[in-house]
Amino acid sequence: MRIISMMALLALMSGPVAAASWQIGDNDGYGAGVCDNCQHPFNGFTANFDGRSAAETAATDGTQYTDTYSTAHPGFSPHGSETVATFSFTGLGNNWTVGHLEIDMADFQASTFGSVITTFNGITQNFNYNDGFPNTFIRFYTLTGSVVDSINATGELVITIDRNSSTDFYGFDYLKLSDIAAPVPEPETYAMLLVGLGLLGFASRRRMQKPVA
Image 1 (cartoon, rainbow, N blue to C red):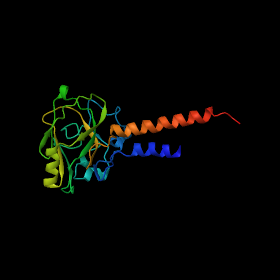
Image 2 (image 1 turned 30 degrees about the vertical axis):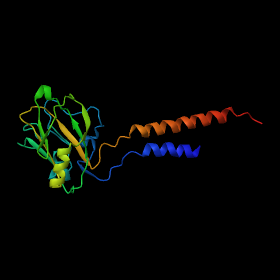
Image 3 (image 1 turned 90 degrees about the horizontal axis):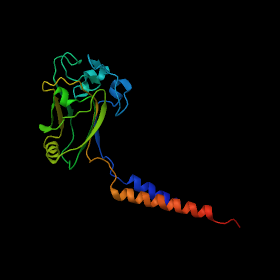
Image 4 (image 1 turned 45 degrees about the horizontal axis):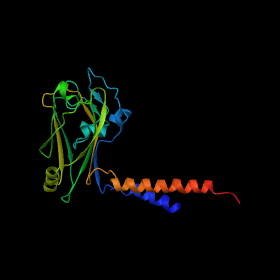
């Protein structure tokens, strides 16, 4: 039975594992301990929240745009007159075949307040989200072939989010990039796990039903 248990555990662990990852922002809940995929406490009328540390404020890779609300929004953010947030992943090399990106974002309401213009290495992305106030949401992206090719050509991934006259309040906690696709186990992995658990249950019932001498 121990062998069966090990088989089930190995099946669960046999999905792909990230070989390398890069992160912008510290995944601390917007500097205010906000939980993932839940509601934030920020003011929906005045915004201008700044949860950054001194190091984050001084950063130049895009970390300076995390832990703020509303990001790059003149009059409602700590970024002055800026209207474009740029996040730069550098030193990525040129051997990419697939990539995965996750972004923890807050409050996008494109239909109500207007859409932003977002690009990955100059390639336009659809960011017309309508999560609503006061919701945070972690989104996952498998990078398109053209974006992967651009990483291999430049050794970097530059993400720009242009407010584009949108009056939407939004924010970002962190962005994380890895050089594999989303680590979701394949159906065969789940099948192996279910078979192993089923055998465990069967063996357990047989042992309980065995007559005592």
